Length: 433
View (tube, rainbow, N blue to C red):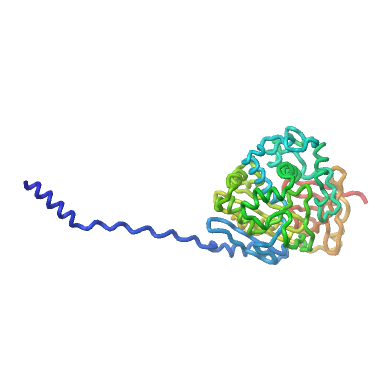
């Protein structure tokens, strides 16, 4: 009985005690600062010496991450300026291939000849994968590439000329074995996927991504400049349109990067994911891979513009840099924005007397009977190549020179000059006068 009363008493006491208050809700997550602290200062510091040294006329930097897109504009450009993309076009040709695979129109390992007109012969062992990954054994350009105007070198290269070349082409190396950048291979890939390149790209890629200021024919193209800041005309790409013919804006490319990072809903999300999937140690579809293995990037250049596009899926970061000047220093600005480089490193320039400059004037013989010519124009030297526009040489020392339009450097010797490129050196012997 006592036990029953005690239990009842405990129940009464318990029912009379107020319940413990629920824990307070967690504080809302702090919003990420926009833009990130110090980002503007870091980009400004990278761009300042480039503008002060007159390396470019204008530059625009765009970044996209979880905070959203933002643009930093300098000089003559802004986020809506239309600029030639050059080889960055290949990223979109690669995406067009990924989309065609998703639609069941082609397979990566289809022989290229399966999709060419029946009257065009082509080695059966070369596949679409080989073209897309620059492993088809094709040269950078065909041997019937002979531009009438070096200031617009691709304009007169027609589909008929391309098909004539393909009919007698044989791989320089076994397909699938050797990586060698080939604008020609990407041009062939684009012709296979989309004979009407711009219309197909707009329907399948550009419109779904809302890229309404991107295409082959876009109004309001920014005035381009060569590496010496001299105004030059735009390039027309003829049969090479899929390897370099697109024009775009930083804002459009930020939309593309946002979709590639999965931050923008799109009907082509699976194709975007497939395009960034590595296929070789050097390539995804249209994208080249950096040495870290995770970052994808591509650069492009025309006679008057330079472009840089990069995507780091692990960090959730995309970067675009566009310039209305054909200078490879743009790539360094992109690497700083991407966090891969601390600062822009500009090559030194010294002034030489006309006597020292005249020591190197002359003709220099390359392999295959081709010649380079070095001339003096006033206070500087000019390099004239068989199939490139003339390029001013800037002196870093009495014997070392460089050009601003690419990563080419030159060392002069008594009887020769040496061309230094990232893929190796090449010597040209001085021809007897």
